[in-house]
Amino acid sequence: MSETEQKCDVVILGIFVADLAFSARRLPLVGETISGSDFAMGPGGKGANQAVASARGGAKTAFISRLGKDDFGELALATWAREGVVTRVSQSQNDPTGAAFIFVNDQTGDNAIIVVPGAAAKITAQTVEDNTRIIQQAKVFVTQLEQPVEAALRGLQIARASNTITVFNPAPAEDFPDEIYSLCDYITPNETEAAALAGMEVSNIDDARSAGDALLDRGVGTALITLGEAGALFHNRHTSELIPAISVARVIDTTGAGDAFNGNFAAALARGMDATKAVHFANAAAGISVTRSGTAPAMPTLEETRNRLSST
Ligand code: RIB
Image 1 (cartoon, protein in one colour):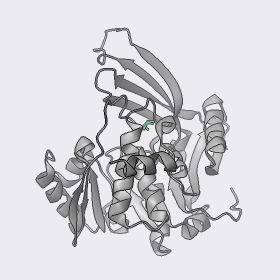
Image 2 (image 1 turned 180 degrees about the vertical axis):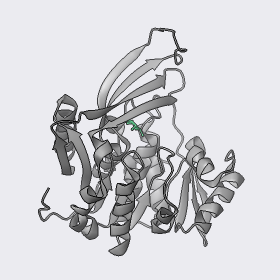
Image 3 (image 1 turned 90 degrees about the vertical axis):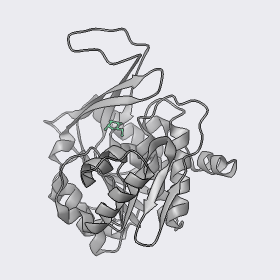
């Protein structure tokens, strides 16, 4: 794919999938069928959700990915056209667009996910190199681990070499080369991912600080560990601050919260916001997202997040 001239504040590498969300009281056991209370199909995939979050959060945002030429692929393109996301996306004739099975607990809003990346499983380091210029010109580059790790590594290398701020969301908790740590201005695991990376239990703020220290020792600039309703720990060699989550009357669906956080953190950094203030902003956006169903559709606008912040 040739690169046309277009400058974006935030560039995100990741996957799009169609989210097939089933709400029920509990997950069925193997061999069991249970009745659910709701079903929805909509746009998803961590990177794609983060791109929608960043665009709604006020940043001109580009998304690098790979789709199939099918109905789910059309859903992706229609979503990005509506949201104003600049697409750096190829479409395969042979591989299908991916999909995710999402179980949402209809009592608590908690979720469990199986994701199949489909065509995006063939994103390569070359795919990223084809988009070198837009990454170099961006203020912030974000990636995760749903597409092959070689692509994430290449994106982070290109961004670092051009002083583009790097945000690495190590989700899902897959193995990655140690080289990645020193390429991260910010690494943003949740508590489960932080525990897996650091090889220790993370069940309170002191544990999170210890896990953060382990990540700093491996070379990250700042460990930003999301801790659900406790907020997010911003932890580096100079500052270690627990930034509280905003309180929410009723949680409907937590599936897109991490993506709301990452996309809005990137958008706020790209606006030049101080990093800890950007975490407050991202927490507010994530707090709004959990009061709505779905992932990309649950992302708040810049105005909604600002209003929420000013009312706390
Ligand atoms: O982070 C939530 C996302 O993870 C869902 O949209 C699902 O597609 C999975 O990739």
